[in-house]
Image 1 (tube, rainbow, N blue to C red):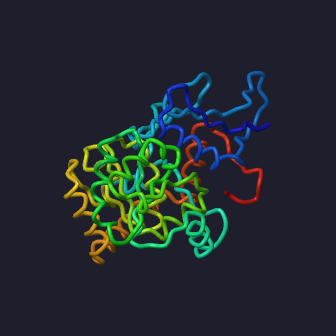
Image 2 (image 1 turned 180 degrees about the vertical axis):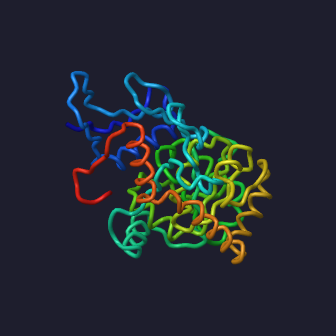
Image 3 (image 1 turned 45 degrees about the horizontal axis):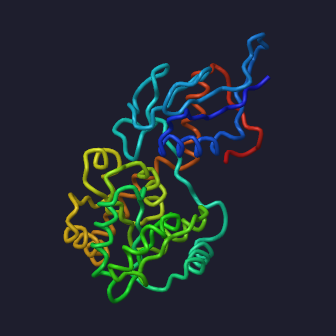
Amino acid sequence: MAQFIRVATGANASDLDKAVEQRLKHLVEHWRVSESKRSLFFARYFTIAIGEPMRGSRILINPLGDAQAKWPAPLGLGWGIVADGADVLRMPAYDPTGGSLDENVFAVTQKLRLSERPRILYLGTYRDGAGLSTFFSAVKNILASQGEGILLGGLAYRDRLAPVVAHLGLAQKIIFGPPLSQNELSGLYRSADLLVYSERDPGLCYQLLDVFAHGLPVILRDTEDMRNFWGYPTLLVEGNKPEAWQEAIREVIDNSRLREVLIRRGLEFSQPHEKKQVARQWRRILEEISGEPVHMIRSRED
C-alpha cells in the first residue's frame, strides 16, 4: 500500500501560496509514502496544506513563517541564506526543462522581437500605480536613445497602460510581455541587463529565485519585508523618486563591479533552492512525519 502526496491550498490562497503549491506538486508528483501495514482507516493521500489548514492535512506550510519551526507546528520555508538553516524546507527554483542556453535566448529574442540594449525587465502585480509610474519615469531618459523595457506578464494590461506609455513617449520602447514558458523566461533572464521590482507588494518576489539563479541583477524597493526576505542580493531603493531609481538603474548597467557583486549574491541566494537539494529536504521531512519511507515511481528524482 502507498499514499499519494497531495499539495493543496485553501480558498484564500495568496500568489505565494499558489506558487509554492505549483512547485511542490511538480517536485513530489512521482513520490509515494509507503504503508508498512494495511489499515481500515488507510487514507489515499498524504496531504500538505499551504497557507491555511485543510481537512485531513498532515503538514501545514506557512511560506513566510518560522523556518526553524518543528512539526506539528506550521512549518515555515527558508529563503536564501538562512543562518544555521542548511536543512530547512524551501521552495525550489525553476530551471530550464529543455533547450540549450543559446537556443532559449534566440527563441525569446525572436518571439519578442528584441533588438536593443540595455534590456530592462519589470516585474510586478500591476496593481500598484505608484510602482509602475516610478518605473516608467525612471527609464524614460535611459531608453530615450536606445534600449528596451519589457513588462513581464504585461500583455494582459496593455489596453490600460498603452495610453500612459504613449503619453510618456515610450510607445516604441516598452514591450508588453506575453505569457512565457520557463525556457523562454530562462532565455530572457540570460539576455537582459537587469530586473526592476518597484512595487510595495512583495507578492511576486518569489519569482526572484529564478532571476537570481540566472545571474540577473535586481533592483528592489526598500521595505522591511523586502529587505528581510529578498534584499540581500539586490540593490535597494527607498521611496518613489524617479531620480533615485534612474540613478540606481544606470549604476547597475554601467558599474561592472556592482554587477559582479549582485550576480554573485544572487547565485548564493538561489543555490540552496536548487531542485535536487530541496527534494532531499522534503523527502526527509515526509519520512520523519509519516514514519514510513518515501519512494519514487520513477528511477530518477525530477
